[in-house]
Length: 317
Image (tube, rainbow, N blue to C red; front, side, top):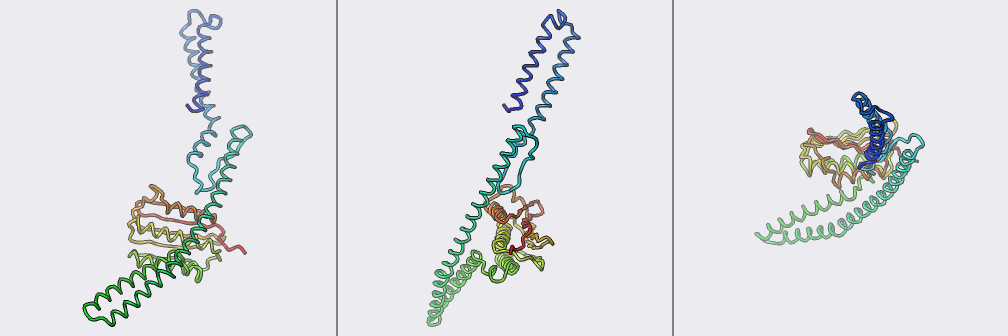
């Protein structure tokens, strides 16, 4: 039984006992009880119970709001707080809960930062090994197959050239994986060039039509912010290709006068990605939390939009 109903039952018991005492005590009412007196007393009891319930509901409303927030709070959506009013025990409880959320959000942001930085370092290590070990080995195999096919007679020459073509395609796939794991173009040429390369490669690989709208004159962004914007765009494009069954995707990047940068990835798929947020979406939320950005995902029958808003994204000097 909830706190509200327990308090209400106790008050109802007390008021009911008082009414019964008034009904049957010869000191307060007629003996036998007159019908009009009973009606008046029962009506008074009903009024008292309704008033008592209303007052309790109003008085315990902050507790109900606190319970609701405790069951729905998500540390990947920071800023969920209850208003702190008054000085009573309930107000102190709300203040304590809000302070706890502040600590948890700070700890979650710090732990997410460590995890994501470690993840990027691991991506770079894997990309380096793929490039240095697998890539070079496959290049050597490709050259060896070419020499063998040039010296071989038919039909062995045709088979060797076919193996050479398969190896070349595999090498291209390894290089594509290396670019996804370690976007060197982001460090060398900047965010716009990196997003242009990403969308171009995505369109070629998936066959989807991709349109771009990148505003000029973007503010100078630090390396971490650029990396988050790039990874969110990469994950949003991947989701559009895997789950949305889209035919067209639009990627836009714009900014406002106060330094806010907004990245939006919109597809024309069937929507419904919010039915259950998977690791990809939660990963985007964690990255947004890392730089203090806001991630909004709207999904409808006409498609899905992923929008990342970075407030005051200008590079700090």
